[in-house]
Image (cartoon, rainbow, N blue to C red; front, side, top):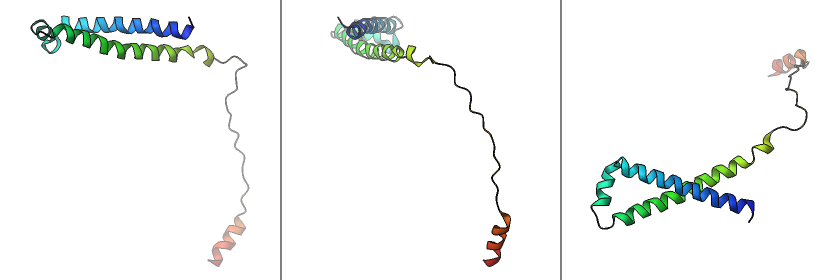
Length: 107
C-alpha cells in the first residue's frame, strides 16, 4: 500500500476517534440539553450516529490536512552554508544644484 494512502487511512481513524470523543463530551456535558433530546426521542440514536459521522468527516479532513502540511518541514531547513545578512551600504549620489536653480529661474 502506498505511504500516502496509509497516512490517509490512519488520519481518518484518528479523526473519527476524535469525533467519538467530541460527541461523547457533548452528550456527557449535556450541551444544549442534548442528552435529554437523544434519550427521549425515537430518532435519538440516528441523531448521535449522524453527529458522529459528520464530525468524523470534518475532523478526519483536518487531521489529514495537518499531517500533509507537516510533511514538508524537513525540506525547509537550510542545507548549504548560511547566507550573510544584507548590509546596506549608502553611496552618495552627486546632484548638480546649479542646474536646478537655473531651471527655477526660467519658470
